[in-house]
Image (tube, rainbow, N blue to C red; front, side, top):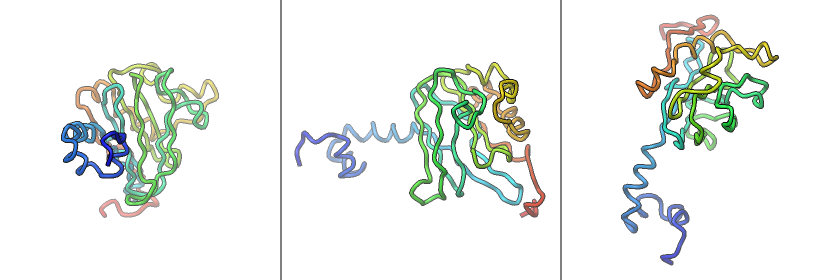
Length: 204
């Protein structure tokens, strides 16, 4: 094996463990890189009629990557942005909007989505497929800022933007940016929005 092999190619060929043995300086660097990627679960609890992101609120540093992992089939990870189905702008104005494919179940090929946040500010996002159930989340990058801090959910109705559902408003209200910065993450508020009928027995 040529020592001039590109390091990325080496990782693909050998895997992290072997590369760390052959090139010891890779070890701490790769472990740190793995640990620096926070994970948000995209999941559901059918008896309560809930589809949700957990944690619902997350704080990260500028330039950090976030990974969403689906436990169930069907959600997307979509930024509030006019280019995404005419939604109101709730991410920094100079940030690129994201919109994932439909995530599949855990263990399938397309069950994860990653995005790197290069612009500071507050990012609100939703699942295209489960919006009426309040499947939304908030990420604060570096420090709060941008349209999501200046405008309440639903302001875009005056501009002819898509509806923001009441359940979305409730969840976002439970995710104040200052609290996200202080706590670093806020779990999904599971008792805030419950749709028991016709989903089943809440005691299951």
